[in-house]
Image (cartoon, rainbow, N blue to C red; front, side, top):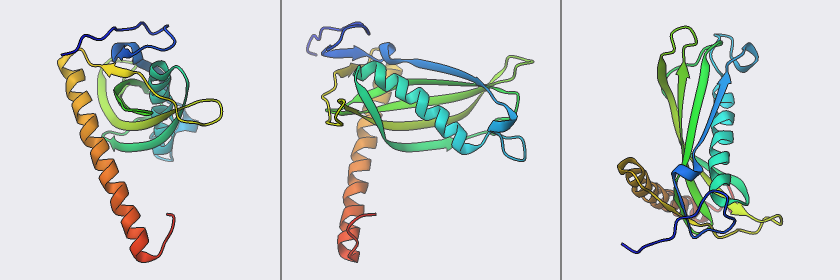
Length: 181
């Protein structure tokens, strides 16, 4: 494998960043205004927290403006209740030319017992842009652990699926006479 110079998170224009340099963690206490009538965290509010945590990881990698392009996949596994501590962790899975994929995993912590329960996972796609909205080239990601390598490889498969699905929808719009959906 080609030897690549690794850069710190403070260098402005590195060739490669490690996954560890992009990691982000956020903790929120769930309050009544975050919940539905059953006392469970609203799904849209959870998506907001996921987007924020993912954006921080993307920003740490890109070191330029980033915009959310897609929430590729989200699994709501367990409900989150008022009073729970929500813990979100994110990191960049893979960088492409101007876009990157971030994985976000969400746990709930019971504040009385300290036990953790996995409640949600999501993949998001962000695009690096300059102050005028023009796409910016990104440094590559260097996975270092077995788990990071697996996520790096899986990110390419998800990207290929997104591109295939996008082409299918585009063709469908052409055949049905719709120009944009």
